[in-house]
Structures are given as C-alpha cells and as structure tokens.
Image (cartoon, rainbow, N blue to C red; front, side, top):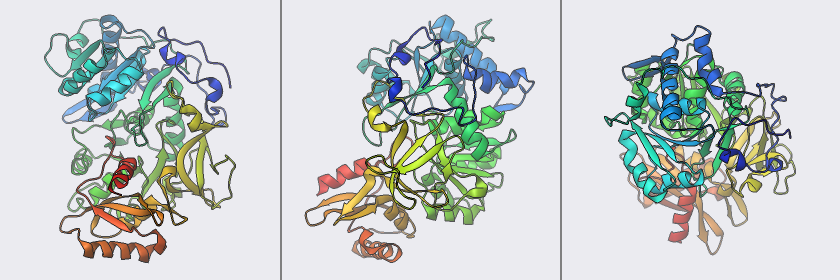
Length: 545
C-alpha cells in the first residue's frame, strides 16, 4: 500500500479519521488500467474540461422548462464555490451537508463543494431531524446548504446537533439566501482547489438496512474510477444520451447514474420534479430519455402503466439498489424489448462492481465482475469455495471500503478484500448469482433457505404486488419461512389466498422452502432509497412469535 499523497485539505478531519491504511482493502488502480495525476480536482475533469474543449454549449441538465448547458452549469458551480469560500469561510477539508431533491441547484451545490475542496455529505430528502443529526455529529459538520422547502427538519436537527452552526438555503427570498449571494459581481470564475487525488471529497452514509448508518469515505479519484470502469466498459453510453432515474443524489447509485456517468462523457441529465413510477414514465416520454437508472420495484411498478405510453427513446435500463427478481426481468423484456441491466454495488464501493454489458446478460444472474474489479466466493473462514457453492461475496478493485471512524471496518474488510455481506454463487462461466444477504438466509429444520428466492417465486403470482420474506421463530423447527405480502388491487388476503400462495411456491421451487406463515400488509418497511428493510420485518416476526 503506497503512502498517502500531500493533502490539499487545511481541515484534516477526514484524513485524520480514515481507518489505518493496513485495514483498507487492496486498491490497485494499475491493475484496473487506471492512472490519475497526483493533484486532481474531479470537477475539473467532469465539468471544466468540457467547457475548455469547446463543448460548453452541450446540454448538461434538463428539468421542467429549465435547460442548463455545460457552460451555464460551470458558471453556477463557480458562483456557489465563491459563496462557500468568500462569504461562508469554507476551507478545503470542511464538510458541507447538502439537503435537496434531485434538482439542478443540488447538482451545482454538490459540484461546488468538491471544486472548493470541501467534503460533500448529501442527505436524503425524506430524512427527519433525528436521522439528520446523526451525520452532522458523526462528520462534525458546521455548514449546510439546503433547499428552502426542506429546511424545517434540518433546523430541528440543528437543535439536536449544535455542531451545525449555519444553514444557508436557496429557492426562497431570504436576503442571505444562496441565490442572492451567488449573484454578486466577480463570482463567475473560480479556480479549483489544489486537492490530491486521494483527498476525501464525499462521505456517503449507508442507508441503514442493517442498523446504524456508516460513513463511507471516497477520494477525488474514486469518482472518476467508477466512470472509467463501470461507465466505460459495462454501461457504454454516449454523449448524445439523456440520463434519467429515481435514486436520490445522496444515494451513490443516484450520484453515479444521474450525474457522474453523464458528465464524464458530456451527456445530459434529466431531473424531473417527481420520480414515482408514473412520473418517471411521463418524464421519459416528454424528454426522450435514453438511459434509466432505478430499482427493480420501480420497473415492476411501471409495467402496469406502460400501455399507451411512448418510451421508445429508452435504450439502456439499469437496475440496482436491491436484487432483481427474474420475473421482473422477464416481464420488462416482454413489454419493452429491453433487457434490464442488473448490478450489485455498495455505498462502501461507491457504485456497481458486478454487472454484465447488454450483449452478455444472463437472465437471473447479476453478472460478471466489472472490468477493473475482481470477485470471489469465500466460506466463513475466508477460503475460496468451488464454483456452484454458495458463500460470501468478496470483491476488490480501484474503490473500496474506508469507514469514517468506525470499528466495523474490521468486519467489512478481510485480507485486502471487501466482504459485502451478500451470499452468492459463481457458475463455471464466471457469472455471479445472488442468493441472499448473508443475514437473510433462513435456517429451518436444518435447511438453508434464501428469503429472496421465495420472494421471487411469490412475485410471479398475479395477486402479489410486493413481498418480503424473513425467518420467524418456531419452537419445533427453529425458524420458519414467513412472508409479508402486499396485494394487488382486487385481491383479498384470506385463508384461501394463503393456501393458494403456498401451493404456488411449492409447485415452483423445493416444497420445504414454502412460507408456512403469510401476513398481508398494506406496505413494507423501506429505506428512503426504496430498499426493503428486512431487519424491520425480522423484528416484526420476532415480536409476533
């Protein structure tokens, strides 16, 4: 492991709170065919380069009636960066909390923080005060930029976390609002901070599917690495594409798919005001979007709403954030003619590290290691297992886990590999097949049952809209398989339907895997990014036992 470069941060908090270098995963950029200069500010590459190379008039952002070219976005970014430094006193290394929906100003503010040498800590719009106070305290954030429409919960969080000294809003009419400060003369130019390629530029907090969120620290170069690995070799979009999707920019899946990947190639991002499935269909149709990033549940929800709609502009559909059920893949392909590009990523890894290019998709499989990454399946002792044997997924590449002052670093990284907490198997052709989260394996009467496999089977029944499957305590069997099911309109959850669903599962997969208990619910617990919170269902099942 090479020594860290000379930092460009005057505020050394982030570097001081990196885990010890010896606890990092192996980060081999050369093996991935990547080389970045020692002094690197990522905004110079993602944005300023396009303007300098006479591509400034290309469309960067479309939102409602608004259209910003790359040159216009660059000026907005410069103006926000000047406000940060001249008016708000930011010095390189300071953390800045960002709170907004996926809007053009959110993109400009995010890039401005990076250009000024700050560390962006973006937060989900749906988070409430208690959830916002945690990253404020953990990352010792004293400045926030916030859409005025979302300031109430942030102000309440400020009372719980007095580290946050100042909140600056945009979009309102306050005299000290960001909009007014940006308009000052001479703010249209800004020289990017002299940061090192291994200076931390963002702290992404995990979504909390497995407990207390963890702060994952990513370098300037990491933002380019995911573009130059997944973006270049798997996604393979082009500058004329228009990217659209639903994941929040605070979710690194959204940051990569909706901002970094298009900007790396000079393409456009479409940011509709609303991104629920019906709204996403309307926006694809209106703006002729060509590349879509969203979760499997959103693709499934869109299926019933496509009749009479024109989404023929779409050519690339990426699915990630949770496992893609094969029935959803099959139904989307049948309806649209487009294969869903499955992928697994992690906030710890910044973005997707296993996926397949469109020409190499194997339905039901997550895919192959993204060029630049390596993956293997290991047992509980860290030994690689034979192909076809389920085990823990381990991966390494140019990005990897570096938790912010968190002892869980030792659990996630082992012998230079990131151990993701997912159970997979690899087939003889090198494809990786998802089985479950490692803690989603259900042991019942000595049988190992993957909850997601049962979910996939239930989703093929016409009555089932959504479902989650977990272990429920049982004195005779240790645990049983329990399903929580959201029904489609027109179906009623009664004993007859319980038996029909059980028989449906028994007929499709090994009978011992069928759900011995089924509860019908109006909604499933999810994170702000739309991931199913199986740990919440497990807690519910424990309480109902």
